Amino acid sequence: MNNAGEMRRRPLEGVRVLDFTIVMSGPMCTRALADAGAEVIKVEGPAGDVVRHRPPIVGGFSTYFAAMNCGKQSTVIDLQTDEGRRLARRLADKADIVVENFRPGVMARLGLDYESLTVDNPRLIYCSISGFGQEGPMAKAPAYAPVIQAWSGYELAYAEYQNSGGRPANNGIFIADVLGATHATAAINLALLDRARTGLGQKIDVSLTDCMLGMLIYEMQAAQNPPERGRQVYQPVRSSDGFVMVAAVTPKNLETLFEVVGYPEGKTDPRFATVQSKEANWSALLNIVEAWTSQRPGSECERIFMAAGVPCSRYRTVGEAMREPQMSARSLLKKIKSADKAFAVANAPYRMSRSIIETGTTLPELGGDTREVLKNVLGLADDEIKDLVARAIVEN
Image (cartoon, rainbow, N blue to C red):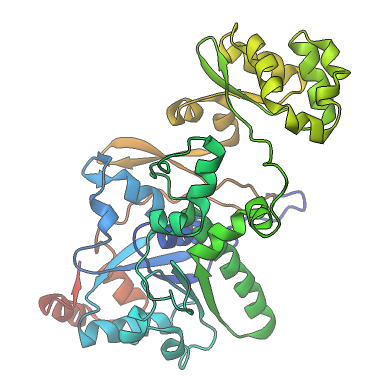
């Protein structure tokens, strides 16, 4: 309960989401809605979301899939059949939100696009997530996050900061999908607020390319008005057992850094007196720092610098970061079980003082909720559902 004695609740309780998404950007968006209390019905084809088969596998279940889809219901409807599409439209009539991330045109061919569904449900909020957006010469081009990250300029900008001068880096972390999911979730919540005021839903068009370019704030400005010299780039410096990152951003940080590394004369060294001179002598500054850090383990460098107020971190693996006490204090990780084997997924990275945001622990077995959804949401009788199953329109 909060200070006013009111019962805390999840902010999207009573909101129903029809989830036509696969892979990452869409499922991450709808999982965020589920964490906030929405009832999320994931509509899958007979083969299911392709990520269901991706490792790691624990207790026969993909934990990769689980991390993006926990807390949802799964219903299998064959949208390649007329009756399957009719069932989906009936579910959309009962929904507050539809989210899809197919290539533009796919949902229209199925008769499940915004214009078709809002004839009977004008309050519907309909979010489409795609590589290049719903309009423009590239709209229907096939695209996944690695392609978007190359197309947007991000990968070459990243490579330029490495001073490698060669092949762009390999790609295994799908930033475009994460950004797309984040922006889609924000837009949906804005649309819910607008609907509360106007009574009307609306269409949301999220482009992963737009998300990536919008993230490249400095790089977009430098592309239009190239600076005389490149910006300073924060580089790792060696410790005795690896590397650390030191980010003395403010003048106060820098003065403290000079004291810590035993170079107090740095505070009056003309090479570091102004932002411009510091950037021009960046390599010299890094050499001074590395002469000190290379004599100490990364954990000691981190402890000393952080205690002094200079931001610093040793380089951790993902597993090491997950085990840090800070993550326990923030309750970042939520344990989920699959066949009595536990694994952790990330909770939402924010807390709310009056509302509960909570990761669902149920794992959506493929089609495991079909019967319940058809019965409870559409009011179908058991015999009707059996007939649909027998004709392979739905599976349970």
